[in-house]
Amino acid sequence: MKKKTARKKLPYKRHQVHGRVMFVVSYLENGKRARRHFHTAPEAETFAEKIKTLKENQGTAGFSISDRLRVEAQECIERLEKAGATLTMATDFYLEYAVPAGGKKTVEQAANEYLDEKLRNNADPNYIKNQRTALRVFWRDFPERTVNSIFRHDIESWLAGKDWQPLNRRNYIRDVSMFFEYAVGKELCPANPLSKIPRPTVRTKTPDIFTVEQTERLLKVAEAHPNLGMLPVVALGLFAGLRICELLRLDWSAVKMEDEHIVLGPEVVKRITVPRNVDIQPVLAAWLRPYLKTNGPVVPTGFRRRRDALCKLMELEDWPDNGLRHSFASYHLVKLDSAPLTQLQMGQQTASVLFKHYRQVVSRKDAERYWNLFRNTEERSAAEAAAKKAKRKVKAA
Image 1 (cartoon, rainbow, N blue to C red):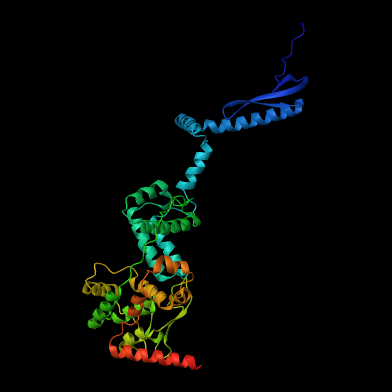
Image 2 (cartoon, rainbow, N blue to C red; image 1 turned 180 degrees about the vertical axis):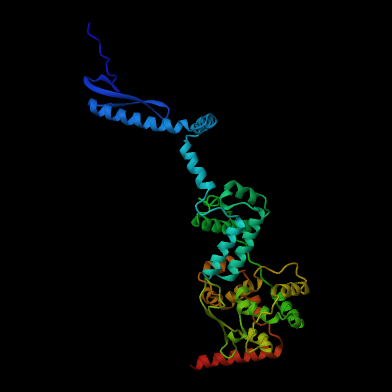
């Protein structure tokens, strides 16, 4: 009796699909049943062998996983499926946020490196000082926290805990956001957590200025207390409109009394502006003349302490924010009735800045009184005589 030979088990099945013979390979993909159709048996067999080899390789790796790890992996997969994610996606996300390519650094370490880089790139020292102040507040509230461990909800909670006015809040968001942009560039974190935090709307308010009466008293009090050394500072702020940062850098050698202007070179002006000359008005010349020096700093050391002492002597509750420069802008604009000329003196590039942030509406009468606040009647008479003489020369020409 002839023995029956065992029939070879094929890795595929033959089916009729729409009247055509197709060869179907069934297999598991990501734990789910899948099928592939082929027109010829060799194609189906080649694909089946590839699946078999892949399965054997994965099976070998699978045997090295402990039962505990296998159970944990399955639980994680089920939880991720609910969020539409895979184990690979979760792993990539974790490595990106928890193990940044630039390494782990605390906020304080990274912030100091950021500021040092700004300094090396020749950023304005006052700008760096202001940024350091803001970032110091931030890193003290996140002690020992690494940059990559801070997310949007951390920032929002931090901001919610601060009783800041809209302008201060916006400035802190700006400064901290600039730091995180640097951190992203250094691969200390994958994204800026402040990029989608809304900036508060800051409503423009009328700037504070000194009234004519306050200006007169301010000059007299500063003159009556020479130990404070504040009279030149006050006069230059009121009648030349210099910024505080410009005053702090100004040397007496830049005050050209004979040429009737002050030279503000690149070492004095704010970094975003260009050098300029500022006219020395007759009233300013009268107040400066007794204090003129060949050289040396115009502002003595301890400016803030001296200013606070002057404010106390004036019996002011608080020194108006940028009050000297705001006063100059307001009274100068009315005096000349020309925004471009006032902008030129103040080193501003657009009229919108002048009108939105610097000018308060004052009367022509008050402007005239302001620019006639001479030290005494003799100097006022001399200035008036010089002005009439200048007019006669212009007419004669």
